[in-house]
Image 1: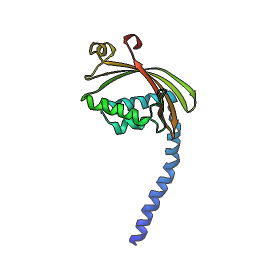
Image 2: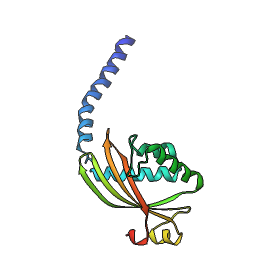
Image 3: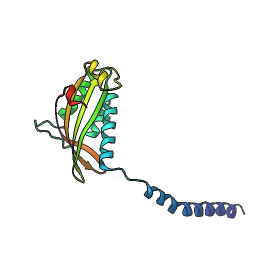
Image 4: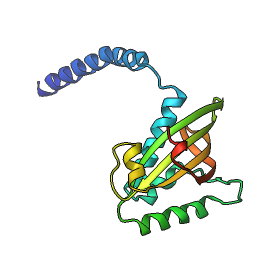
Length: 165
């Protein structure tokens, strides 16, 4: 008798799951998929958070294993630069402005990124300038691999106030 009551509950639960599963699948399919630009912006925001938290482990996830830039630097060299910056700066606050995002094809993009780095929080660009922050312009080459955007190459230079809009 106990077994038949138990199996009745299982079968009722199983029926409920089987009835709800198609509805759940339909609901997940109805949501708007993010555009490549939105996913790139999310990736840049997550990389900014990793840098502010001085987390080299998280930050390196945004750099492709086969990274190589025009100066011949590879991922390990770029990570050493980041590690040095993280060690030298106890507090890192970053304000970014995304310039252009050019989709070259469905898996490749070029991104212009302006970054202000300072030791204290800046609410806006004007406050960033008053802190005499480090200003940089990054020209990133991105590829989407396994559903994730990664930096495969980058160039950077010092930026000035006129670069920030």
